[in-house]
Length: 89
Image (cartoon, rainbow, N blue to C red; front, side, top):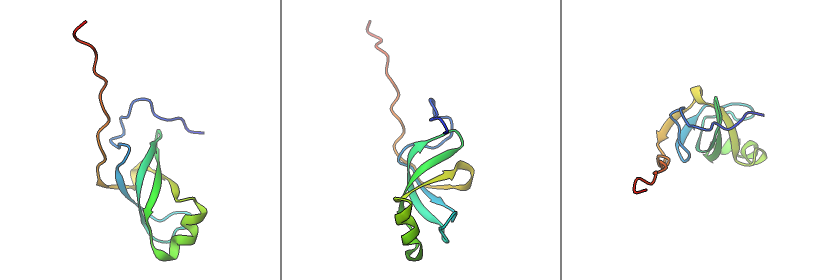
């Protein structure tokens, strides 16, 4: 199984809203939110989809793994917080 990326250099953030192409049993593109970032792919919670695809989305538990190079960011999520070192010490 793919390992989670330790330091995110992909340009994607958790919470990004994406437009992803149809794949698998899905016939139309769908919108989703990034839940997990892998090396070359993203785990996405499907938030909007075509009504005809609803049975397939239900079977997938409203989740999909999509390739990073096949998606378009619609809205960026919050940037990850940087760890602040104690400079007072």
